[in-house]
Length: 312
Image (spheres, rainbow, N blue to C red):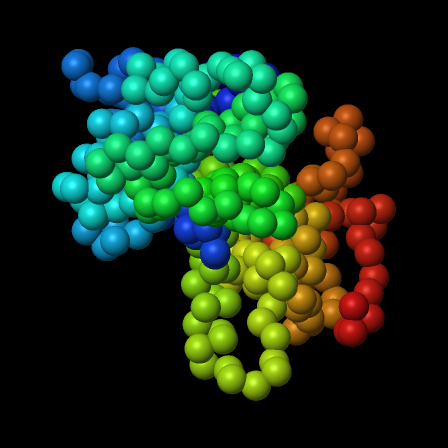
């Protein structure tokens, strides 16, 4: 999918729901265009109804952008699922009167607001400057409160304070992620799953840390947590590969460095056996040797040997 307004313009679109305070990903669904949505159902309704299954009936508040917001969905969430909604709404919705969509209506000045009340829904049209008009809808507000300092409606201030959950999560994964360049979309999707798991694991870790430690001690930073998690997940497999007799010397050294340990050979002298060709020399040299590597048991000539002390 191509979205020019996003930092990463090309990719697989994933619709997700995040907790605003912790950035914990509650649920996510890949967007597969028309193939995802059942016939006769609005796409926004399908995604919202599937994402809220785990918080249904919890009296929480949802903050959504104008792609999801429509009046029938907001009423259904309020009455059937016990969830309130705050979000922007497109100006072409038929439920909105002309006064809300016409920026030049009655020569409106800046910092003016129009309110519309219908059943359990409040809609506000706010004009921050002469060239911009913002329309928001809410089932959590039922009055025309306006902040005297900023002259902004309470609905706008509430929306601005809660709208950044998913964007903040994207920023966290972009700043610190485990993705690698690939042309295979399943692998790209798997990397995204790892990034989501990393963020969620860190949120749970910090929550448990503050519950157990009431003093001034601080938890690990996210970088320290990711490095620690990486070591715990890969330690067993690194030791398994280290136990294999036929791995390259460079790979063995890299694994030992990652594990912060070095294997000191019991015998500091090369082992001897029947005469064989050196594994490193060209076959044209036909160089025979009786010396074998003490670690991988490969025949090696004098040119391809290295002498080390017991501490190296």
